[in-house]
Image 1: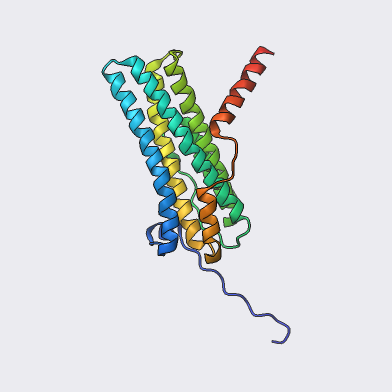
Image 2: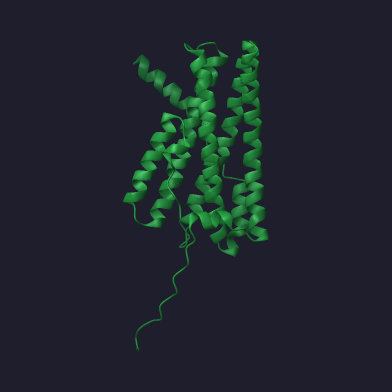
Length: 240
């Protein structure tokens, strides 16, 4: 009929599983693998440090174990900065795209600690309230970044208490570190899944710029600085 525009074909959306299983084209795979390799190598270094601390504790070398725990916390903060920066990059670039990947909510059964489980529960609840996939995408990125920061904050606090001999229940603190490492690893896996899906649907002309943003993120306040600021505000309120 005259006066009626032609309908644009609907963009085919892949499921999260399809996006994860299917291989990426070579140029996109290079961006993805380069980024993930940095994340995983940094997390592996942190895990080695924590495993070393646990081994030293098992041998009764408590002073060295506490020092090693603090090293693992420092390494974890670095990985957290990279993951949070990536979430922010995905969110910023995603706001200019019409075709965003499907996402699934975080699953409580994939976490051990209360903080991460609560975040996953909240994410799952909102996922079913927000019917638009676009809203679900940005909401998951926000909750994932917040979960990473809170998990690292708890890890950093427990490691610092152990390193300074301030922990009232040292055995519980060591269990906490192991639990939080597990939860962080889940957040890392979730980040990798979202990144791969996002890269798959990214317009070809934006791939190079996006790769540069991942490799050289904008300078922002690190997790550790925010943690220190939060502790300082807490002490001020306590003394008021």
